[in-house]
Image (cartoon, rainbow, N blue to C red; front, side, top):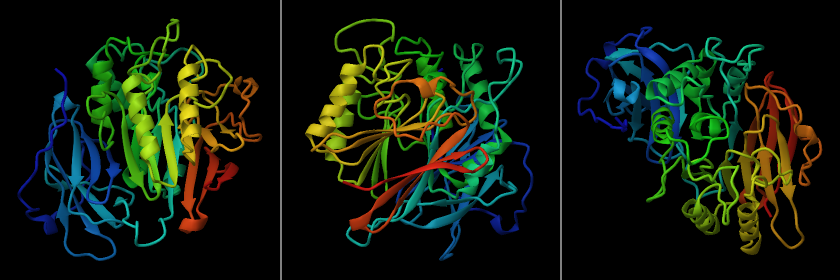
Length: 444
């Protein structure tokens, strides 16, 4: 049975709410996690241990004018006991506190739970300052299913440090979990892997306080280096939709982990580099990583965007010309990569920044050509999985000196300044919350 996402709207409004007392609820499996947030609605995700009624209430922190309630969802096994709660009585640019209820009992959480809606500013004021975090490759150990030897995952302390950043949003860049051999061929295995990773205690505060968006890469899509031929991709896609909170999944008749959204003066394009990907091992004309329809959708939207910054998320490195492993420049995909680069340059699309992961080391790349807009690629990897110690030796022509990092890290992007002197400050921060490098991108 293919699970579908259903919303059940409650018409009753919080009976006996004022008398409810916080309790530790054994029905809470993981979450709450904040998903997408726009000007008129915001999503809260939660997972229970068994069938239960779940809803949240929320209040404007600045101008309290009564408590509002999300829809009520009855969780069920077919949908992995997950719920998407929609706060649809919100206003733009407002911060709200929220509380979670399971079976009408208030769940006590040891940290603040707040969300913020996207601000309305165009034709009214300068773009808002905001901060986002990003990263990839989160391996959570489970020894009975891991390879023998040294544990591959470590430094889970990185997630509480990410919570300390108080960022507006987080963009997960793929390999957000690692499906193991017992997992990827069955729905039960896929759900067990999601349950295990999503329930990590160190993740919970970060999930509850930062809006989360995600793409996927090979390890949350299927086996290592998997492509469009993976036979169980429909089920991994179903799980991705159940466990993440993107505003949409696919567009029109284009299927996959694809969406876009806006925050401030940045447009975000989230691409799927697995669903339509030709096998690395074959040689063919018009070889594609993202598929013809997704490519056209992406380029049309990139050209249409009026945003100061165009942020593009894709699982593997885009700009590097090292032509190794699963880079866009390798395995016969370079013609498609070059087409994207030429399109950006020929159409004078400025301030395009790719955010990428996969390679288990961090670096920043910049392609500059006289008379053409610069193109950036910021790779942030890995959050907790093992490091690629050979990455520094890859021959990347576009590498920014001093940006290679081989330890666990995440990226922080700060968008700031008035409209006429906007800037983007990009930083790499390690698992101990120490900044390793900083680069500033000024709009062209």
